[in-house]
Image (cartoon, rainbow, N blue to C red; front, top):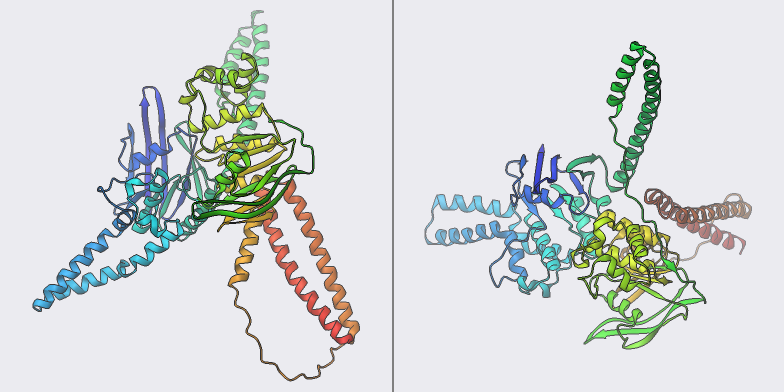
Length: 634
């Protein structure tokens, strides 16, 4: 059954500039589709057309009859004075209406028996129960806990919340409404890692249809099963998740390039032949002239493939400062509080040269405060942070600020950097600021463009400690990849705060997790950190074996084959352990070699998890056999 049918959508906001130019998409019931495209490609316009906020110039929209549509980015206006709890309760409006009617019917039955009233009461009771009327509080608590909406937030006025908080409340409300079709417009932008993972788990269980706009590549990999990319106002479809889309898009590009090159080679051959025939025709050979004309017509018919193009990669890198010394940073007994609330206490850390560290934690745990202390912008309550004498910091903040936003891009570079006008334009061009764009005012740039400009300015600085605070937040996938290209070329120390798990996995070789006032220091990638946390959780949840009553000792029967057989089995177990350990070392090297290949990295990590499980089993078997051998010898 088809839930969403978009056919031939056309939309212009400026004359001659079509955002959508014949966009068509079909989404079947239960599908999860990711809607991709650059900022400004028309993704949000499609959602606004589907919800009736905008009318298409051409084309039509069809939603399956009776299906309820919910849009995350569209926040309804609520009556003045509504609290967060009031907003969440609107999800249960039909159930509350049933509840009121049931109370009225019960009162009427108490006054005088009425068969019709009793029948209506029984019917309504069944509907109330099947609709989850008795479980509303449980459902509300479950969703709120998953999305980090605490009881204190539920009592706050909805109008007093930030835009991000309102979006989170609206997401909770739509989940509680249990709509049939969810339109998600950047749903993870205002969620921390735990809330994002909870949402992914919810969507895995959700039986409805999902159409999601997201720049969170890890989220897209986990949630969607098909991708629709908006290109030149039309839809290019890919039957897989984000990783499949990346591979398939490259394959299609290479196929078009091969077709174009083959076509151009044939055209060159025919053009040479046509030119020769025209030369012969000058000597009075009309037949050759006609043949040349026919061949030229054939050449024009062959020109069917435009040369495929790809985004030009960044052609610059950080001007790195050489690092001297053993320690880039030393954190000693660091403590910081605000009022009675302790963000973190007694933190001790050593950072060597070249380490790449992800600073993670829920919103409000103190990540940005920690960064400010490293930058010297905030003083700790206790302890200290020592930076090596050769350390020079480059900082890309979450909220980009320019002292003179009325300046154009060229002037901004000239005033901030020691360079000529031509050098400024060359550097800007390397970051895809070209032509008339360089004379735009900085204030006219989008958030992603401002991040790119700030990064361009950082590139000229000779730094060896790069600090990034949510570098990919609110950026489209192209802009995220531009930043990743720059960071990938950088070889100095990296400390970054991010909720972008794709970015974290790509760059982190060490993870600092801030939670409950403590910092967990893990040496390894983000995926390894998650696996370690899961094992820790499983060990905590595993039931402890009950203590057995002491039994009288009995002489054990001798094992067939005696100690020689046991020694043989112990040696075999040792060899198996050594073999598994060697394989683990090989996989660790493979993971390092494939750091920038996400798909290959996934396969390596999957095999490594299997080998680790096998090794744990082999260790246990080896220890058991060794203990038996020791006992047999004793």
